[in-house]
Image (cartoon, rainbow, N blue to C red):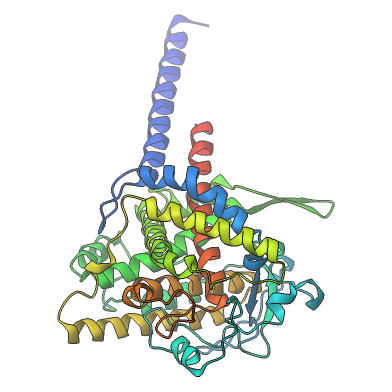
Length: 441
């Protein structure tokens, strides 16, 4: 080989090395962009949330979700879509949800009234009225009362990638963003991964406009975006990698994660979505810390019929509440709806109706498993909002009798803790993807 050829080869090798270093540096910046920084609209940094979730919350909430009281969720998956003609249900086998046989449901759950977690029976009309109260987080009250509703074992029907995608999935999220978040139709929001591109619009016009909105409307958007990001993370972390001899292998899919969250592939949207996930986590974390006094009363029993397990479940739940109260950088919900009373009331009602509408859109999801987890997480968020704006009622709770001013059904309790468990898992999955990205460099 001539010296000139060797020099050319060396030059190409050096160029390749430089390119490799640039690529590695870019990947590192991708990871850092996704998992560091201070969140907008609150005084909390992402690293603090990561550490708090990893070492305090995640291990305990995972155990709680395995308890009988929290693993059975009653849901009607047969309600028709109220907004458009359905595209037909997903026929992929992983979309299927297996209802729980009656014999498997703990006796204390299947025999109970929706409020049968109290040691004292209560069937007063006042409690019924309380459930129907015009609360901020109110959603479809038919979720558990319909004759078509069935119990589902959440542990046997985990949330993961089912193959459900395309027009039907796009229509659901598009309806949520375009028709239920606060924005004029002239503003394009490039949030849905399947949304078509609109020329050179990188979404900055939307974010410039969003920053000019009042806090409440910004918060609403961030909650929905955070929920969407969390669901997408679950799908990326539990992806069908291969199916050999009928034995499917599920695990993290880095390519899918980058498609949904990489700054370049999402035109800068990915890190914003992930920050909104953290914001949603903070909102639900705050709700848990606020509702703790409700469960600390001796009258409240997480009733399944197994006294020993019920006592252990309550002890674990109260332990989680103590951790949530110890978090030093909570979101301050008092900054919301703090204007003049008439305007605040009108905005709160608008906020509630938008959210209720989103809960109804979940009946348009064609994949039963996606519908199940969409309904649960939507109800969990609705319950968290109900708690955040019922502080006075919670403070006035009587120790030894049912409350007239604030009440939670078993369904709301199960949704609240499982929804927060999903967020906790999302943040843990994000840490795993961070490591995988570093190793793939």
